[in-house]
Image 1 (cartoon, one colour):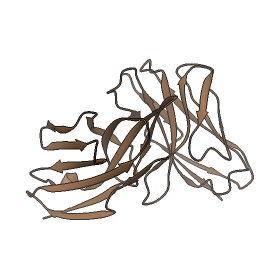
Image 2 (spheres, one colour):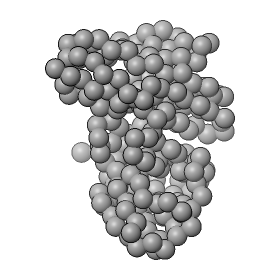
Image 3 (tube, rainbow over the protein chains, first blue to last red):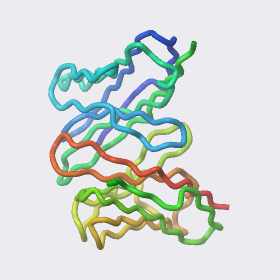
Length: 111
Length: 113
């Protein structure tokens, strides 16, 4: 089976840095994704990790440790528009490929 | 422009009626997925299809059915057997390759009254 845990909510200040953690337990690990979702909208892709280490993309970075079943999303220079839910998702290869999502972390950015 | 389209955006149905949600993509993606999202929660996988004429149950398939007769289309039927159908439904597609992300439609908000 699979289990993905993220904090429910976080609050941070505009211009600051925030780290959103994700732990997972899964069989047939085949990659970890982070998505951003604004309320009532579709999720949009942020990052992908399949090997251990840090992937950097502009203000967003994502880290993976497969041995620890752990990932984090790092958001720098926070902007008000970054207020959204951030979904950690793990892809499994069990016959076919399927992607399982965590419940998401709601980030509130305050001025 | 290429993309994935869900229709309608809002849908109201009476309890006990079946309803079909449309999902169409012109991205030439083999894999398509249906997720359900309830308020304040993450996405739960209903059904997925890796290729035309084939599909598998996800974690919450009971009360739902799908078909994949064409590569571009993956409609979801919410049947009267689904006990709590009111939710936000998201369709996604994914191309080949290990590191390809899923592209989502804009979602259909289904309300059963």
